[in-house]
Image 1 (spheres, each protein chain N blue to C red):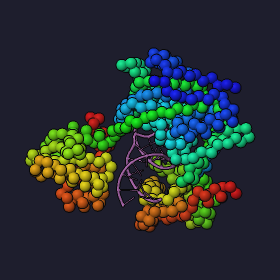
Image 2: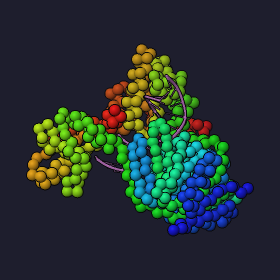
Image 3: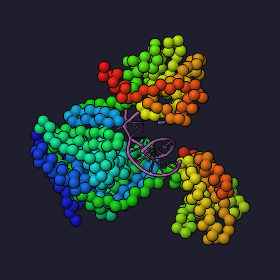
Length: 246
Length: 246
DNA sequence: GAGTGGATTTCGCAT
DNA sequence: ATGCGAAGTCCACTC
């Protein structure tokens, strides 16, 4: 029942590197607390002077550097990066390198307080129910919410590499594109739908209706929609959940 | 030189809660490794069955839940949330609650392998050099992008404690101050540049041109710029990167 | 590999 | 407080 977790406390640079390399090869999750400075070069560049931080390296070699506050990591490297380690001026240097795009994260440790290595297993499937998905599902199952006698033909319909949430025909068999937004829709949403309508027109050579489904439309977006002949249908995630729970 | 780090290994639920509450109150960074399931309800909702995970709670009470792979946390709560803890069916329940918007994250621990509590200090200032720096560099290396026969004399020129992005002379040897914005520039940018021009005039006793370099100028900023005799040159980071990659 | 759109996006800055 | 746009966004997906 006890989990095997390895602790290395206050290691010398040599001891640290030795163990770091060993543990990194085990597909373990590594946790390091230490005093370090950080450099990053890549799509942007950053520097962070000395301070005490928490560094996590996961099985997939992704790395995140956390300061004592803030939800987001201050520096990071996504998975599939690789590591180089050495001692520079009696400091431990860990380089996490990403190939494409080429980016390099350098962590210089003045002092490692602790390194923890644990093999942790997590096979569960993460289920996320997003609001926009709920709304789409509710509309697909209850197309009368869109309009009487509306027929859904396709969800996530592809038009030249773009995706329309719902594609269907209205009671007069007129093709209709529906864009769903879970929050108040703005001009971007309207323009996005308009672009899809133009793409549809070009590809299929016929006019198409466009409907924004959202809890609200911003005032400017409403004006724009009117000018572009785009309709608006009020709907929201809470309502959607009600329909889905029936 | 040793850092005080508290370890609690394989605690009973009672011992864990006792220590969790105590350490949470210390503004420490808490690290928990354990087997747990997770529920989230809020802007969306999610479930995650039992598995071994790494949970981090920071000084500001932000919480992130990490699986053994992936750069991103699987669940989280931003700073300023508050905690409720209790034992439910012999499991440890930690609730992290956010008020606005109302969101609740529930972690049910079947087993805590270890809890680590550390007071870590990090006062350094994080410096990120992003697109604006690229734009400046591209302009310095290709001054004809500003104007034909433009000559860069100084970057980050200091005028009474303020810093102008680029200082140079135009084809008629007229001194010119350039303010770069990577995003749409507003009135503030215009006023900032105008202030630098005034400072320059005062210090050197001669007129100076002012140019805002940005992808766009807000309509009000454009009007203001015209009134103040400030010019505008369209440029952006994407373009800059192209020039820099040559 | 490039391009598009979503995200519990988060974050910062302006209005 | 709300809205808008950027982010080293990341990520999943299709062409």
